[in-house]
Length: 299
Image (cartoon, rainbow, N blue to C red; front, side):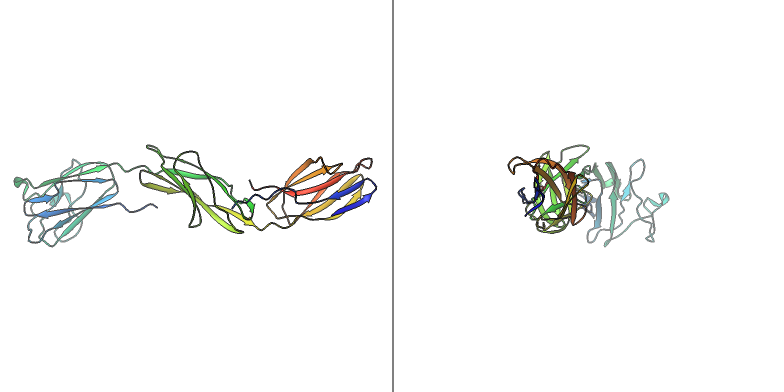
């Protein structure tokens, strides 16, 4: 559509640019040790920090306890009445018969020996060996930025930074809500997500290292159905030419000017703050001028 105000001034608006289509931490493991007559099975149990060990008296076993013999006791075997154990009763006065279970969670690495005090002479001893827990990775979304607006359908360019204090991040997966968008196994952690329809999306990245995962903070974005770009309210006053164009708030638009409809010069790029945007440019009556506005492609 062309508006003419004087012999040499006109305005032409069109959507000239192509629209690019864009679119936990778990509980520790449990290890089991059988408490039989004169034995623990297995005698050595290897676990990771955060794991739990459950000792279970096998049928018919009697007069046993599970007493920590670490310099600083890793646990206190419960008192005969079932209450918390005391340092004074970690001995032969504090024994149990089947059926009985006892458990302890190990939150630090180390070697933790233990014994049945009543049957130590028969070699009834055991050891819990606790390996340091794998470190938790860190991860954050670097693109898109929170509050970004895209035209539908949107192929989103997603990026994340991820690291771990020791070892290597082996996977970063991207999600829109619970919907997977894709994953990458090596840095740089960037993907282009599948086409997204108009709507609001909560984006996250999940990094994994040595089986331990962490989730980034949520980044909220919007995908909108783009309106047709059209002009209205052209006017000339005080050596200024003004007009407005329709827009989607949050999308970027490029304004260009030409004297011959062949060679175009960009005079501004605007991120629309409302459904219409006003443009003002110096009026040059000696030269014919044409203006056009196009929606910029998704970043």
